[in-house]
Each structure stands twice: as structure tokens, then as C-alpha cells.
Length: 259
Ligand code: NAD
Image (cartoon, rainbow, N blue to C red; front, side, top):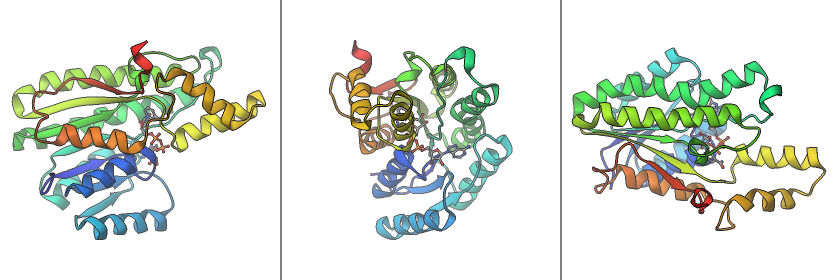
């Protein structure tokens, strides 16, 4: 379905991003993956993806908190693939503390990774997409781009900011064949959430399964969202029926925000 298209997926060495990069490749799209991790393991995954789906897969080690590294990543993808149709801003981190105890450096890191990085990547990708008269920008937001939760002031502020950025970019690029949307997942069992489960279990002296059950109280459907279910939405937003969908914040949240 996406044969001949070229994508960047930030934060795709783990969790949701890895599922997105994999499903884009499965659909024939060339992909630049990005993120932290063991060099050899990343190279193994890059090669496996390229061999299995017969697409080009490149890797950028850009730290998305650095604007110059993001600019270089976008330029490198454009040069390597010859065009750039899809940008998925997915890299993200979490830190939890009440607002009065929130360390300044952690606040900065959460904002830079979850919000500023998307701005920089979009800023450098939009001119390329405008020249092509085609582009699909997808931001992995969160239900926390729509509602709040205690101890997540930096994350909720960043994700609400990303919801706003999504809408403005959609409006500014509407006449250029570009769409910009955000996906708002509920709980997805990835390393980012596993750390929250482990920390909470330790802090509150609880069993990890009991903490998982508590997390799922937010979901009407008492299950975790699967990374593939987010990836499927990304593929849909890059597919043939996506033209009128722009500026949207699409929930994939087991009914969390319906209440
Ligand atoms: P994860 O920890 O499994 O993956 C995060 C990815 O981001 C990794 O590849 C990591 O290397 C990369 N990354 C982090 N900082 C980076 C940096 N400075 N530069 C480059 N790469 C960096 O987490 P995940 O759960 O897959 O989260 C992916 C996205 O989904 C995040 O934006 C997160 O906020 C969002 N999200 C997650 C959930 C959830 O329940 N897991 C729910 C809603 C939204």
C-alpha cells in the first residue's frame, strides 16, 4: 500500500515506534529508524527489517533534544531516499513527580523530547513536503494531550502542546497536500510504562500485577492497547482514504477519554 513512500519514525528502537516502523516497512515503505539503544542490536534490527520486507531501512542516531541533529536527520533521510513523504514524531520520555517536587532538569528534558523535537522535525520536513505537494505528519501524542493525570505535569503540558502544534501545522499546510494528525493512545505496555509499573510497585509495596490492574481502571476496555494497534492507525493515516483527515487528535485509548 505504501510502496515508493519514504518515512522517518523517531524513537523507533523500542515500543510503539518500533511497531510503527515495522508496519510501514511491511507495507512497502522505506524507513529511517531513530532512537537510543545498543548499536549492534539496532543494526541487527535494521538489517532484519530491510531483508524481511525488501525495503530500504536507514538508521539515524540523532538525539531529538538537539535541533541540529534533527535537521541533519531530516536532510539525511531526504538525501538517502530521494523524497520524504511521512514523518512520525514518536520519541518520548516520562518522568513523574508532583509539581512542587518536579526537578527543573526533568521538566526540561520531558518538554524537549516530547514537544520541541516534533517542532524541529516538522520545521525541516515541511519545506520538503511542500515542494512535493504531499506529506503525512503524524505525532504520537497520548490521552495526556487531551486530559490530565496527577504527577505528570511536564508530560501533560508537553502533550497538550503537541495537540496544539498538530492543529496549527494542519492549518498552515492544508493547501499543500500535507496532513498533520496526532494519535492519542491510552496505556500501551512498553518499556516506558513498565518503568512506571515497576516504580509504583516498589514505592507502594504492591505486586506488579496489582499495579497493572490499577492502571487499567482508566480504560473502559480492561486491556492494554497493543503497539500494533497504534501502528495500524499510522498506516491508515498514510493510506488512500486519509486525505480529509487533518488537525485531528485520534484516540486509541480503550475508551479512557469517553468518560
Ligand atoms: P519506549 O520507551 O518504548 O520508546 C521510546 C523511544 O524513544 C525509544 O526508541 C527511545 O530510544 C526513544 N528516545 C527517547 N529519547 C530520545 C531522544 N532524546 N532522541 C532520540 N530518541 C529518543 O516508549 P513508548 O511507550 O513506545 O513511547 C513512544 C511514544 O508513545 C512516546 O511519545 C510516548 O509519550 C507515547 N505514548 C506512550 C504510551 C504508553 O502507554 N506506552 C501512551 C501514550 C503515548
